Image (tube, rainbow, N blue to C red):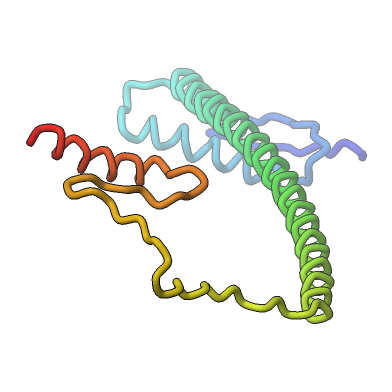
Length: 174
């Protein structure tokens, strides 16, 4: 880009500025500086143009520093947001893979279930067991008075044991 030479008159001081920026942009900057200096001299007549220029330069430098700090802060936040978005994207992809795996597992299980149901239909039905009635006159063992008999079963569960032990303890105490 070619350098533009712009002649500015700021508070009676003429200067020539060489810049790659457009002439209108450089002129608008000159107008901002002149307005800032005039604001300072208008508030206090004892301030010289030089002092007003220094104060204006300090103010603009302060604004530039704060803007640069804000820009750095925004860059840092954007970087954090991009990292978070990347992590979220990876988690979403992982979740999609898990969903697909689970869908495949469901299809496999449904296939197995259908196979098993087909086998069950092909099996002949078992005859239900019917308990034979006790023939008249056959000896039946009766428990003795005051004792409890247990029905024969594989192994009582913990709840059944607790229930039975509760009653046995009561009888022992009597």
